[in-house]
Image: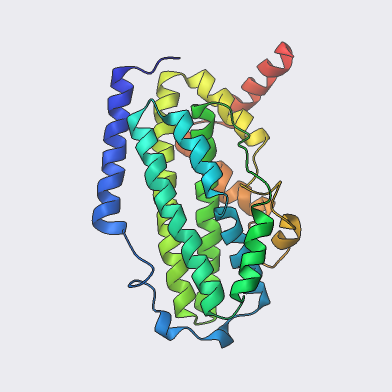
Length: 265
């Protein structure tokens, strides 16, 4: 379906607002904004290593994410340029995780390289089909990632690990901003085609999983590491319900869509 000039302009303005805030208030770099001199290896353990390695592994599929994200949005400037900026910010997340793992002594360079090779043996493929579904997925996934990193921030704070606190603070801030952009675009979709967008929300949630969960080596075992992710109850309470409320989508709407889908089957 062709996208109207009005929609393209709205998405351009949404991206410009996002980009302005990123450039003026949210930019950070690995060298100057992380207090590496304060790094104390005694504050880390193997649980920290497993969590950080897992998060880094998810980021290593970035080339696959970029290929799908840019191609599917290339005709809409605002979303295509957001995908490019998103990739830049996520690339920093992978870099800082890698640097922390090696600088802290949690992993040697050789151990990290072997892990990287094992991750990249398979390619990631999106479960979503359309740009709208991809955007909806992003709204939920980025919020989930934000909460995971905030949990890691809280853990680091309890351990008085100021370096890891700063890492998680900066990354979580990026994830929150990404979520905000996706939410705004999903709202445009709901305004234009509420039934179609709601049906896509139901479809995305029905097959939702984190990137890399199906292909990263030992992913489920890694999730068993304490506090690596969210429990199902936390996922529903902090991710699903708040996001649906933001979109104005009720359980009744979801039930109606599911019933109509069952009748068509």
